Length: 265
Image 1 (spheres, helix red, strand yellow):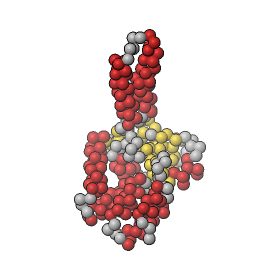
Image 2: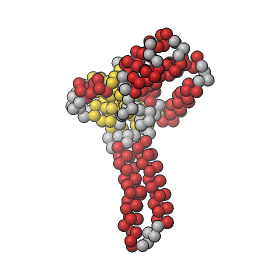
Image 3: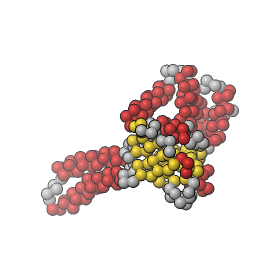
Image 4: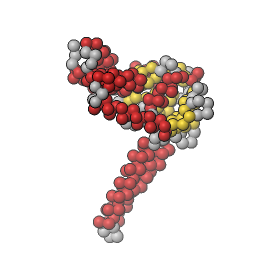
């Protein structure tokens, strides 16, 4: 029987199926092994199976309600409930609009603020009026002030405003246009994941029947997604796409995604 360190090495290598099978075997022999259950919950979360993740943490809570990891999970769940209240709107037809969090704009704005502060300190402490220092001052101004503001503009143009889910389909609202795909026109719906320390990914991918139509890929990684209350978002999509399936990116790219135009948000 494998130990948790060996199973964790499977996860680090991206060998998800082997890790899940080993964890299931371990939990059959020790159903109260909370460390194994935590790793199983992590695999559920990293593959977008949020309902299974929630049930696993509930099992952990029944065993040890004071477990620090369990308490941190509860805090995350409460945060998602607040996000659902503040960052989503109910639509007239019964659907829901998820307002996007402009993560890239926030990061760029933070860099711009720090850059402006640095330039002000530099200008006050250097002899900026000296003609010999003017070229350096202009260079610092361009790098620390102008460049971050350009990055803000680019991030804003590339960011999305919202994603709406209703009985008819899903609509991604970009800055100057909307991209809509009806459920009846979707040939495949996946929660695509990629494990491992190098470039981990988690995204909702909707592939249209028409090969010439745009495939929609919505980032669901907790650290990078623009979607607030992402577990609620996935749950709403599952109401209309019953066969929403978690798959590895490598298993579908060559056959279904290569050569298609993909809108990634």
